[in-house]
Picture 1 (cartoon, helix red, strand yellow):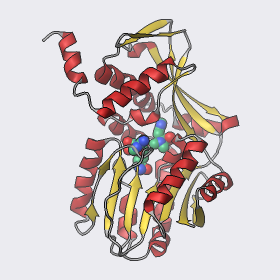
Picture 2: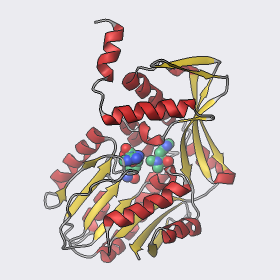
Picture 3: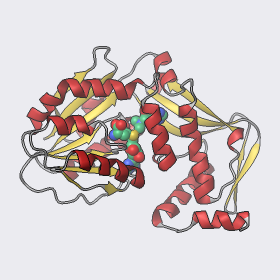
Length: 323
Ligand code: SAH
Ligand code: AVI
């Protein structure tokens, strides 16, 4: 089989998701500055790399949030009440939800939502073996778009779960819109357990997003591998360099892929030229002060029922209730 035939074979089938990916990549590489949406990091390789990131010594958010959740799982269970249903936005490997499932009184259902379908389904299959009495209905999809949630029974409370500081990967306007839509889709009487990363020293932040082993660099560069494989582009990975910098004025870590030289990349009939040092902006990770995020939550129709941080004040978990 010739190489060109192979490329075409990998590009099929032309699903609506693949067509949207192609359109977004062409639009993002045509923009100035060039940009790509972070939701596209998560193909199967990207999801595996994210799991490795969570175990890195420099990447404090996962273990810090796990500490806060462990300390307050009982408080969350008391707020949720018996027979609650959990809906996790961006469930990944469904690790943190185990703390809640262990603490809740007779949890009824778990609905993980994730764009990375095969990775989510493998995680949920393992979870279902450990929690056989909890009804599990995974939903593969983009949580920034209207999604049909499965019917969740009427018995217990609906609890949204949005950990990991994934809210920080939205712009502030997108984050507020997400909080509004989450409240509407969870419905009256719902609560939302929201984990978010707090502003801190530049050195700590930049190390967390540019680790010594180069795992975060591989995660960032995997986006180009994915575009080559799924869309037939010809990115030369060796010609791009991972960059992570703290933009203090915007209170966000930015990840970029920086072109090492003048070069042209082809995708379909289009050609995208790069100057040396020019970047593709691939991710923002906002670090919100508590007051700012609680202001956004309030504007989105939520009130703060509880809020905890770790002893260093690096990461916060809030429980919000629909007003
Ligand atoms: N909740 C887990 C995983 C966080 S990583 C934790 O806290 O550890 C972010 C997860 O969100 C990934 O699994 C990714 O696939 C998913 N994700 C990112 N953007 C998404 C989108 N727009 N729609 C649905 N899932 C998304
Ligand atoms: C999923 N998200 C909250 C991670 C973050 O920290 O913004 C993604 C990530 N990017 C680089 N490292 C981790």
